[in-house]
Length: 241
Image (cartoon, rainbow, N blue to C red):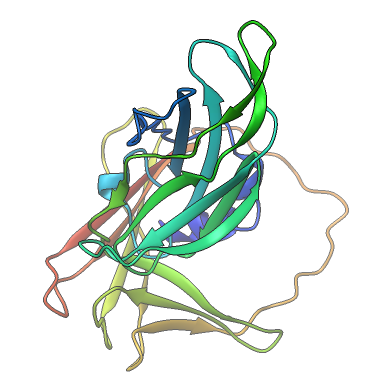
């Protein structure tokens, strides 16, 4: 259920160790000093970039290394993006020796690459060298599945939009699974408005000093189901714990 995904959005940066990491080989294999540019793209909501959903948190890391040994000490590293199928690349982040970029709410298909502009460092024999620039191969999120993205967060109203295609006045079904059982239990149902959004007024909870803990099977998975709408088929998103 996307309730967990919503609550996890604020702390997802702490989960750097989870998810999928793809290391790309260099596109410029003829670089004189053998500089290699790598790019790592990670989706914190899915175990596979091919199953990315609208609203997912995406992080991109870019780094350079010298093949055959040695250290790259300086030189600008850029992270570039472009619409899938386009060659119109735009630099979205750059830094010396390393670059980082994130998307807090995926909206549409997108592709990434890393570009190293060249710099200085040491080879395997600790000789001063000048490294040539290189470009990584491309990592693409070619399809964005049905999901939810935060579009409004104030003291009076919180709204999540269901996308990427229209989902006007439609239900969103939530289920949960307990322990090792395979059966799904109906949790609750939400409905979108004419803007394809689910909105509610935040409720301030009172502080409780003593909470009695109860023993029993824990929720091991949650499932969110979106019906057919906006040209998209029925979509099921499962989160396992």
